[in-house]
Amino acid sequence: MTANQVDLVIYNAEVVTPTGKLSGGVAVDDEEIVQVDGDNRLPSGKEEIDAKGNVLLPGAIDPHTHMGLAGYQGGFDEHFEYDFETETRGAVHAGVTTMLTFLFQSEPYTPSVDRYADIGSKQSYVDYGFHAVIQSEVHVEEIPDLAKKGITSFKLFFNMYKTAAPILNIEHADVGRLYDTLKQLQDVPNGIAMVHAENDDLSKRKRAEVEADGRTDVTAWADSSPPISEAMQVEQVARLAQDTQTPAYIVHVSAKESVDILDTYQSQGVPIYGEVLAGHLAHHTGQDIGVFTKVSPPVRGPSHHRRLWEGVSATNLQHVGTDHAPSSLAGDVNRDDIDRYGDIWEAPRVGRPGMGYLLPILLSEGVNKNRLTLEEVANLSATNTAKRFGLYPQKGAIVPGADADLVIADLDKSVIVDDDFYHTMEPRWSSLHGWELTGLPTHTFVRGKLTVADDELLVDKGIGEYLPR
Ligand SMILES: [Zn+2]
Image (cartoon, rainbow, N blue to C red; front, side, top):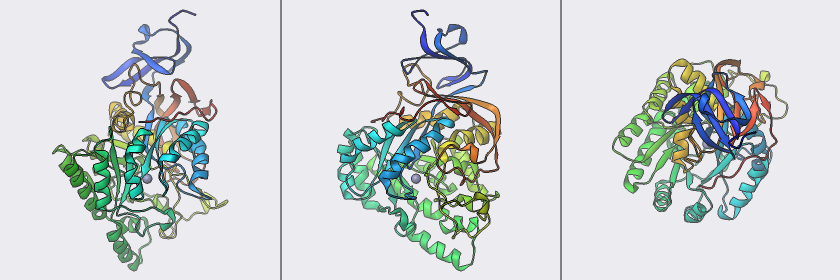
């Protein structure tokens, strides 16, 4: 053992760094990247891993996850604890090393943050931070206090969930509350408002029209909350971001009209940003998807799908998330018993095992279909999100000084998605079942710790740390 031997060396990789690709590897010591270099310049390591010429990416950061929300059996807190274990276990199997998840309650959040952070530290396989959902004026008022607790991002359901899905118990927000939130955020470093932009007043009427026509398929679901419902709200958010000069972030952009609006305002320098879900990059209604994509906002037609990919390439959409929401099929329902082409209105509305497919979709549908470069994948899945949410340079890129959150991915490895693909609580409900994905993470490191190698989980829960921002 030499004096300059480091904890870990990963070599023989195609390393994706912010300045381009490099043949070589990284040296890791005390949980941090200490060197990014050609193989012959790397020090020796106590542990050395041959990447076998595969790609080395920064660990993915999912900006949009919902631990505890679905309430499939009980309350938020109970499921928050349970989900943190099962869902982050799925995450490390697929190259996600950090997640941001939404706290959701009607009481003030400030007294609860430490408790939620503790739950994560006992249960999580990945590092994690919190966004808070603004449900009332009380939450707007406590923004400065929450910023001191490390929460600087706040989500509003903008005119959405007034009437839709009352079971979720979400309070919608109007223009006034969004304006108040943006004003509060002006004094918060890295402060940002995240907005679900879908107009429930209009969608309620559109849905009634669609149902009156007797339509029950997945295109009916899409038309029940049409592009105009989203576009109207995105336009208002952009104008408020412009008026207040405060950053706003549209979660799960689904419509081509929304990408056009983002482009218009972004080109004027307005701090408005867009996220697209990996599921929306995978799917459109021209595919054979059936009831498994009963999500809000809906998966739309091919022209929207095309525009989302264009928006990603043109960086109108800078972030890819998943809206990962653990939920469970009722009892011992067999996946094969679900009528894939059944009535969309009757179909269960269960969650998404999104962290399990975030990187596989970007690699399979993006890189291997020549829609994305590896550098773009790193930006979309890690770097941009770390920067937007105040985690950079600790997280988000393969650079010296950063946490050693790393993923080895084999661009030639294929899988047909089935229940075994996921490692979460509910692997049965997924729109990707039967799909062949090519380009898969093989090794995931969280702060230098090898957590999963070739589908084998190598660590116990509780390695994740809270990330105050
Ligand atoms: Zn969500």
